[in-house]
Image: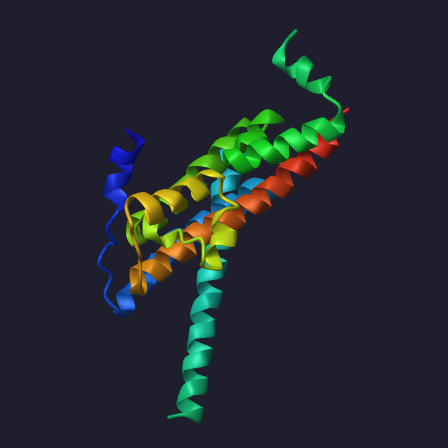
Length: 80
Length: 130
């Protein structure tokens, strides 16, 4: 049974080298934010938990975008 | 004797050890042991989703004993080693390219996030134990 279920995970999904592939980072960032907040918050209540997780998710995304823009500008100025 | 009173009678070092081992074997189980039901369920669902998504994208071949990512992946659960065995010895899989990278990142980060949860469960067990 276990191996039967695993048989569905034996071939990789096709992912092209397109800019859209970066969108696959979003679910991972959401999971990181949720798990981190689950360990840090004193009390788990729906509204504060969702708000805190969303804030962390947004912060990570914004800083990743800013880093990407910074690296892009640096590359343009140095390599061209 | 209720489960809560039985738990409160467990010596602190034993509770800490049990929380760490359970949290490693089943993500979130360490928090369930020490009474953090919601925390445990959130951690379990999130980390299992990340791990399953990782092996869905890159196949079980992303769990490679020779890859440095394996040290991060094994932190998710000992079942990772069994999956690695199945991938290399039963299904004879090898993953490569972009799907492999993304699968390794997802499964590796699921493992590293579980390490954070193990440490947190031990910390909470330390403050709750006798």
